[in-house]
Image 1 (cartoon, rainbow, N blue to C red):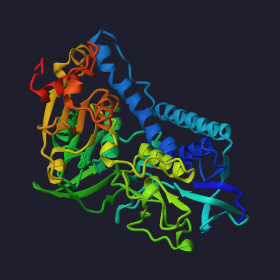
Image 2: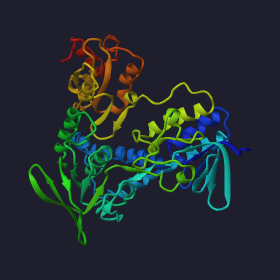
Image 3: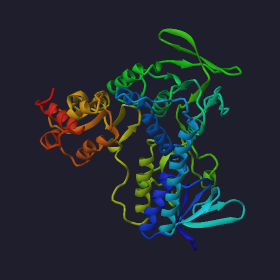
Image 4: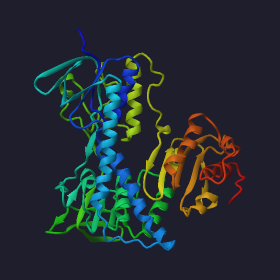
Amino acid sequence: MDYEYDLVILGAGPGGYVGGIRAAQLGLKTAIIEKDKAGGVCLNIGCIPSKALIHQAEIFRSTEQLENMGVKVDLKEFDYAKVQAESRKAADSLSKGVQYLLKKNKIDFIEGTGTITGAHEVSVGKDRSIKARNIMIATGSRPRELEGFGFDGKQIINSNDALMMTSLPKSMIILGAGAIGCEFAHILSSFGVEIQLVEMLEHILPTEDADTAQLLARSFKKRKIRMYTGAKASAPKKSKDKVSIEIEDKKGSRTLEAESLLVVVGRVPNTGDIGLDSVGISTKKGFIPTGDYYRSSVESIYAVGDVIDSPQLAHVASKEAEIAVEHMAGKAETVRIDPTLIPAAVYTEPEVAGFGFTEEGAAKQGHEVTSAVFPYRGAGKSVAIGKTDGQVKIIYNPKTGELLGARIIGTQATDLIHELLLARSSELLSEDISRMIHAHPTLSEAIMEAARAAEGWAIHI
């Protein structure tokens, strides 16, 4: 069979475009099919615009610090539409940057909807059929819609809708206190929206270390964000200008009311209409099963990112795509990502970051485990900048010093976590970190001190 391309990719998100560029670097003639903008959900209606909003929320919150210096701040002319417009500028700029990178690497960008019609064939619309040696599915995901909580784009909204708002409600209920829900709680409360955060599981950030989640909850409580955990919610009732839900938790039943309801209870893989049936690929709960190198049950078809059952994170999609295309090119050194080496980041205030096992998770896997904690308030830099809320927790084997995981909550946690992750991936021990000189004053000294705590000789606590 004559192939037009070595690789055709469905989707130009962090999995698709990164995989495409890596494939081109390895000499594979590549095309990417995308029905929307380059960059996918992450760049256009996800990671990037939300972080732009978070940055501006933090600037807005800093007005209190300016007033402490005697500066008078007049907020009468505040216009959230301008805040939202800045977030769109960031998204558009990066999307154009991705298009430039695709062009630079001689990757064909095909606008349209791709459908798999054979093990080596993809159709685009009704008029074009493309034959390729390999196909990679990177079609991403969309917000999950709960039964009875249908999105209307106004009173009951999803994360896409929330990012596109040009004006703010006075109050909002957020259903789901995972990373996305907590980030929106941080953003919107910073701009004065009254937030009620509802989570079905026992604490906010339910997949996170309980101690870390408790510290974030304490911070949210100071900011008058009301939180209801272990709470089941009934279908909403709408009136002209209000939406209400009934929740039931340990304290009984109650009614919550607000101007709008944001539902962020996970995401659904986009696998339903891409032609999987035509090649005999079956999904499990919507996800495409994959084996080594993220290859599906069809040898020539790979799948990466949110369409497979792995953490739905942009950096995970990118790495999976790199592994897949390196295998296609005969250059693969890694079979799959080690799940204990995946960093997770939540961009609240304070930030939350971590990787590897929690103490409970490590114990369930049969590891001998303990932890060492150092509070941010013990680091001179955190006191100097007035950011003392937080801690570094190292989870380790007490006999060997082997790092099993880590959690950081505090300012710049999402950047700091990588020192510990590098140590873990390089098989360093807590002793190695504890004896490395860290510049003073820096927040990274809290990592050094946590490692020293694991060795039994922390200095500043």
